Image 1 (tube, rainbow, N blue to C red):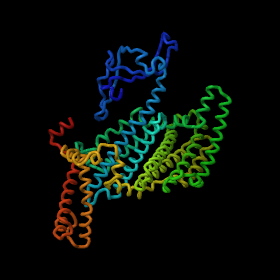
Image 2: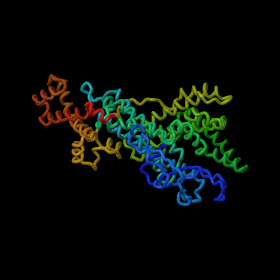
Image 3: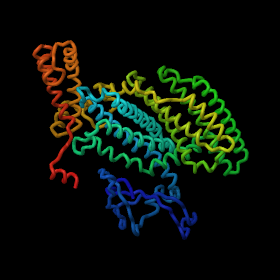
Length: 545
């Protein structure tokens, strides 16, 4: 069940437990998990049925087989040598796949929301003012802009590793979990800003299918609950630790000398992390250094990431050492560790993108907003750990002493109002930055399309063209509207807004005939762009049976 594209596939990937009761291969009766590629046209293969994932047009299908005969040498991945090697193959494939497809899907959806909402926020007016000028709307728009910037940063950063042949399973688990969750939050914010325009189904609605489809990516490879509580820290604590994995390996191999080296190295690691954590906490990270050449306003984030890393390291060692095998069952605890680990990775990706993009001053609000919010989330998770880590003999110390100090000496807070204002202004301003931050998606306005394509798509009732055209015309008319408002304040005209004010401004030569035409055109395209679809009874039942 739930096999992507199975109903249209010519080859079906199959993972199964391979048994050899007669020991024909000479490797025992149970060879373990094995992967095979089965041609879909073989007798007995059934793959013609489909699931209906939330009515999204996506091939997601069950597969079945009865008395299907394949050759081991031809079907098993790796031939006879690949028998029993399926688990490692699956982990490698999952590591690559969940770092590519799901982050791309989430990033594309976020960019669509960014572009759609920013156009709507400029075009749609309330009390004669674009709704994007209201502080209540700036708040979700700030989150949309910053999270979209972060998603693209994370996507690029991870693809760089995969492109070099690396297959980091923990990093790609973080990507799967965090990008789908962030994508969901972005779309939810976009739905709130657009209101009725986002819930009225039809050709003019660009967000509804994205909104409905967000849970699909979240459930791939198991719900994000499992990814967060079992995989990210559960695997990461062992795989990413400089000594823990080696300790386990040498114990299993009964290598006493190797274990001693790993064990005492681990002790030294704990002492170093403890000292770093204390010193960085007392100095609020200022003892840490930032890389040479970084933007002065980002140095604090490099320092606080090192502070968070040292604190995370010592707490992880304390939890692993005191709880041992019980830790994997403490899923609320491992979930908080996973959140800290994830936010450190994502913040690193954002800083990396900012540097690689040339540290553009206009991008700084997006970077600052995201990093401040990310550090606040890290602080929240640390507070949860201090309150809930039940370590014999240390609980009171962690909760009442360290926890109290942590809340007083916080790593981050939600002070993002100023940055959200700047982000919203950037989102609603036509130009290179807006196009760059939403590049890579289907949208009118990219250099490759041109005016002819815009007009052609407008004639085909394309909502992307309609929004982009309205955004462009309304932007051009803003200077004229400012002239009329200034004339009203000076008492040169009596009508405050609308057609009456334009006609009066024209008659008193406050604006020219061309400017009057621009205002009427802007009003026309604005009205058309904010309309939603409606149907008669027959049409409605054809769309929704």
